[in-house]
Length: 279
Image 1 (cartoon, rainbow, N blue to C red):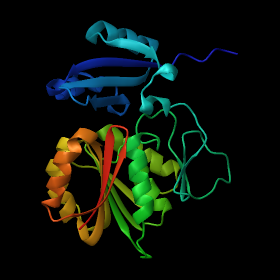
Image 2: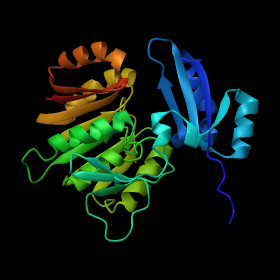
Image 3: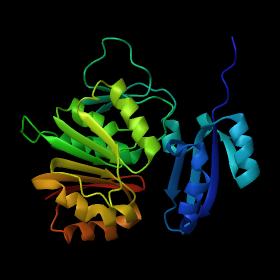
């Protein structure tokens, strides 16, 4: 029996103002493996690329510096979620697993492969969105719809399908994320319900109107996108915002109120905040 290869992670600190440049420089390795975290209380950011091979690690270290760590020993919460775990229960309505399910699994089980960083259900931003989505799903309606912006792995769109949504649109600007979300929808048997496409939330006008809108975006982009997200929400509909750093909440939440959105709930988990609002 051959020994399993080490699962490595590359990490590097950079100035937040150079994040866009780093995204371009690291595009070759696959955007779905790159995580960028703005460091609270500083002008810095942390770049992390998970599950790199020995060869990729050598290239990254030689060209860009940084450090290489064993993935299984990383302290990052999103990296820990890559290890196969027992299903995570969400409000008793959904189960999320990153281990390939056996036959005859329950209909409410969501399978997100263990090779993905975000969108596994364990990272604070995704977990908060899933719980809020469970709270508002349906709202007593037999037919309800969802728009998922910044869909990533597609987990929120898949969750909506499992919770009974009949019309689901999932968009992301990153082409790799779109491909990944489509694959995950197929794995979870909901590709006929969920329409996944590439779109820039700041430019597209083809959003439609939905009962629930979810947006797991970073704070700066969320502030710019909020007016468009509100217009895509039906009167009385709900919006779920996540990806907000705790120290950004004092700026982001008042901007949402200025759009005449009613803030129903704010959830804080670690350094992240999620907001449930109603139009």
